[in-house]
Length: 229
Image (cartoon, rainbow, N blue to C red; front, side):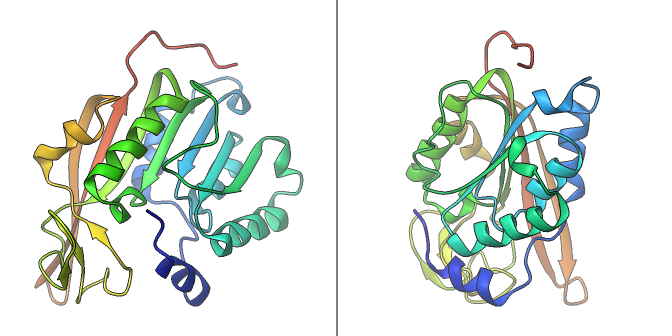
């Protein structure tokens, strides 16, 4: 469910220049010890202007980013062209629909979502997570970061379904449709993965009067792991 509001967000804001510590930790713990990092293929759904793609390129992994925004993909491509000439030898960027990923079954070692799925309703999010499970190899890893219902603005603005709002205040105001994930809903959302851990991170704003809160969901696709190829 691509929300065109993100085109204007990407056009008007400097967005997503560097990856978060949690994403770096996920990649490092799972893949830094692999002798040939280029043999590891990682997909980010909703990659935006490519902060995590930039990091994967810098660290020597093979990578793919997909986003519904032509502006975001253009920004990601321009940065890679500038900083990593020849990146197309092990990387791809696509404008596309993350609900129907254009990749073969079991073709990636890991898949990442940094709040992209929070812009989709519950039923659509299940379909996207199912697609993410489809394209990951058995034993492949999931990293998903999504807002909790405790986030500033989660109880404001127009309601658009269960735990779904157009927030009227806070950092998500003006970002369109947002789904806030309840802890008990996570097993149903990522049914194609075995949950390895669910941790909550948060920070405060406005003299500690407001909180932004997110789940960090780590999963693994059932089955025997494949060697990188």
